[in-house]
Image (cartoon, rainbow, N blue to C red):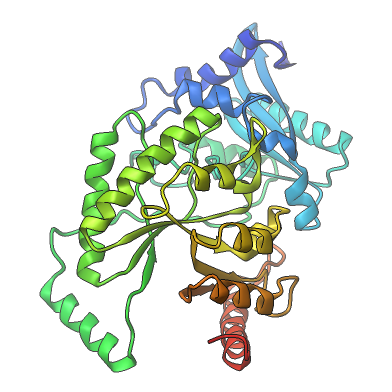
Length: 401
């Protein structure tokens, strides 16, 4: 018999969709399964805020009346509009080692996407970057991590056989941290910092929020803070956080952030949060970032406002600088390209930031976007050119103090 594809339409079928991954990998010691309730919330149109700008359907594959595969078809309309793309995403794809199954699943997503005007298919991706993404091509004997996907070695082989091409390399590094900074490294660091007049003001770092193990999570935070204290850092800023899919989840996460912020003060540090575009989505009618600000304490949890990501989230960065001026204590100056060449009015931004009584700001220059077959070295060189131009823009801007 051939492959039968069935769209998920009932809660019972959604349960099968989620649990299929558990069944496939239950004997694999390296796969770490997602929490069932988290997946249920992710796939729920009522609980996942991404459905404000995404549409999706989920499909199950059967062969000889046996469940043999699954896949999600997703259109992130906001991402397509932002990057001028017509992409359909495939995500949460799992299949038995059967070419007919993988072919049927991906053709289903391709057809689903074409019906909605898509001209390209990419994946594995979720609704947003807060979801696990990517396909493992090596390191199958390593324990999987929370931000990536574990899959069997035959998955990428199927993709290549079906004509799919690699779009990008994402590399994970396993870092073993010593109990103390080696004296040699410490001396070299001090020499370089003195020579170039450098000092560590802020770092991006954090520990994944795990409501099932708050004590263990806090212990990891203390380890991080101890290292940052040794480095002489002033701030520790969390670069993005999944606060949860309900207001109750967000409140619980905020309460824990307050506790972490209190501990940070023991190490002479200030805890902060760097927003992303997804933080302006709504959960139960409330904008996530606003809700977080209102449910965290000003003396324990500051905001590093990324004006570019705010703009990408269809939010007014000036509104936030004026409304929450006492909470935004670090400015994240960024453009989707070289500073001063895009839609951000940095003169207004800096003037308001200074008027709020703060002056610490950081600048970010991202790798320029381009075709997937573009020379990465050339793009890297362009990025460094952008760094120089952005630095010159800030140096010559009279409004920057």
